[in-house]
Structures are given as C-alpha cells and as structure tokens.
Length: 175
Image (cartoon, rainbow, N blue to C red; front, side):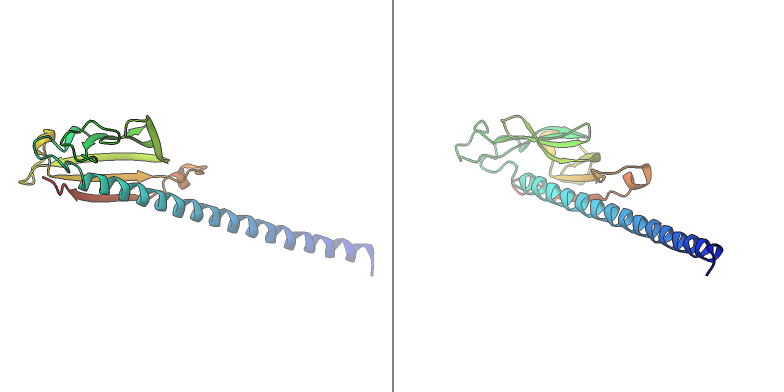
C-alpha cells in the first residue's frame, strides 16, 4: 500500500462522511420544521376551542343585555353572567379577546393574558339572524373566526408560511 492509496482512501471516506452529515442535518431540519408546525396547529386549535366555548356561552344569564359589546375585525368583547345575578359586572364576566401584534390575548379583568404566540392573522366577521354582516353588537347571532398562526421557531419565510389557518363559525346559543 502506497501513500497515494491511503490519501485516495481518506478522500473517499471524507466525502462519504460529509454527505452523511449533510443528509443528517437536512433530516433534523425537516423534523424540527414539522414539529414546530404541529405545535402551532395544536396551540391554534386549543385557543380556538376556548374562544368558541366562551362565544357560545356569551349572553348567558341575561337576555336584556347584549351578549357582545364590541365587534371589531380583530377584537371582541363578550359578556357571560357567571354568578347569575343578571348583571355583567363581576370578575370574569366581561371578556375581551384581541390580537396584540402577534399574540392572541384574553382579558377577563386581570389584564390581557397571552393565549398563544405566533399569530399571523385573526379576523372576526359578525352576522345577524338573517345571515347578513353586521357591525351592531346587539344584532350579532353568528361569528366567523379565522385564525392563522406560524411556528414560534420559524427561521425563514418558507417556514413562516407553514402555519395553519383555522376557520370556524360560532352561533351564539343565548340569542
């Protein structure tokens, strides 16, 4: 065996090891992007389920007062009579959901607490009993919610666009 044979063998081994490391790195990156996407989708589903449950209960306890008092494209204020006194004034009875930069926040009287991070878009559309869009809080009977998120650890535009968009329509049960 000559020195030239050893050098050629080392070069071939180096190329094989380098190719394996590149493949391993790409696999790890694909796995982390997929895991971040799944996490973003699960967080969005949990937030949407919470918001949907509160919207369905809006107006509970009082038919004389509106279930919603603010109906904006990225913010809504809903009322639930939790202590059954006929007034929406106690702790946790007036709840605000809003988008603050890229954070979905819920404020039930103790400050706007973050629900999920990485929200790219939040849109509320409000409909009356005839299916027409309305801006009157007292006329709202259905709310369409569109929530688009991104992975918290998105490092590029390509991974930023991988977040899910969830859409649901909620009928106010108490109206």
